[in-house]
Image 1: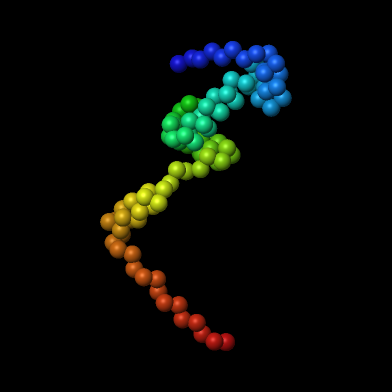
Image 2 (image 1 turned 180 degrees about the vertical axis):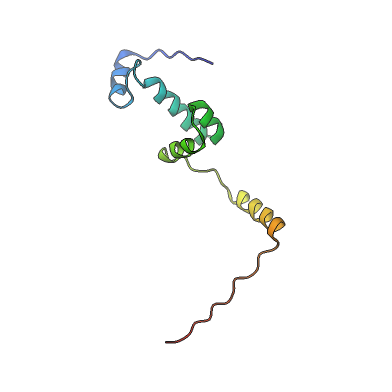
Length: 103
């Protein structure tokens, strides 16, 4: 899908120092902003962000980290992962008692 944006020249001039001009980088920065916001709102997955920007796995991870978009991981996700590990590895054993010796 292609989208055409009409950006007033004065707005382009405001964005140009950081994002470039319509001929040089502005479109990529707008696309990145859409990717970041889509991920933050839960509308895009990490994989979809990579697809949108043409990035591989590690480049996507770096991009999201640079934009402070961290993994969506809830307490429920942690519990699910813990249960899955217990199915594979068996129930967790209590930590071994540590014996302190005096010097």
